[in-house]
Image (tube, rainbow over all chains, first blue to last red; front, side):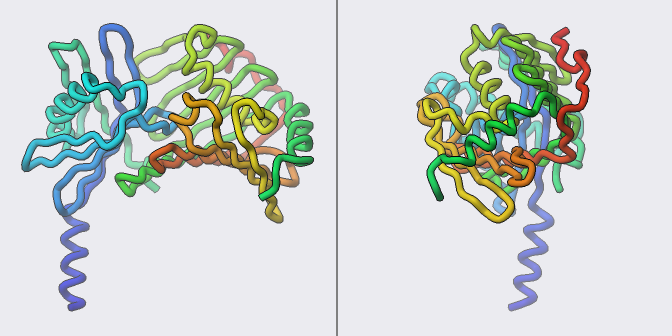
Length: 128
Length: 186
């Protein structure tokens, strides 16, 4: 029993990971910056959060790689409109797979709506 | 927990005596959905009555300068100067940051319902926003005051979904000269 527990914990520690990025989102009219944190567990579901530098959350989401599906859990009131949620879901579905394991900046452009997303990995000292 | 009382007056008097302030800060963002946290660090400078520099140095660089009605936002890619009289969101953020740092939001009955608890070392003020736009951002703002110094030692910002940001002020120095250039908007 104890061996099983140890093996389970070892499996979780080997398969779980977390990544942090500075995020910069630019549209034709405005730009915003912030921080993006992604965490994956042993189920391989990726949970993500985007918030500004002061810590105020803009959105929380999960991404299931097997189904390529993004679910938005919370969206700040200014962005909480069905048409914005749809764009965010579609863009995150493209962006999150690019970010997993990325050790360099990742840029994604939504050509239709002229939105450019840039994510740059943060140094490890953000975790203490 | 008592209602706002004599402590508010004491804190207000102490805040009025703070002409300048500078300190290090450690900000810990706790992410409920991710069961994770992000720690960022920086330095803050304040000069009465309307100048504030809030500078993140690690793990990212980001500078927020409030000087009168203007706010400068500088990240690694861009610098913006915003007139808070024309931007409601930034007016509120600037007002909130400034009043939290010196603790003068306690007497603001119009915007917050306030209660104060006393511990042997601290006064803990819990502010609940009354206005809808503020309630959408914060469920509660909790200010911890050092009873000896009558100054803010940490601020907790609790969001409606349960995420929490704790800002601890360290190595606080008051009423020492603070250079004008720190608040420059160019």
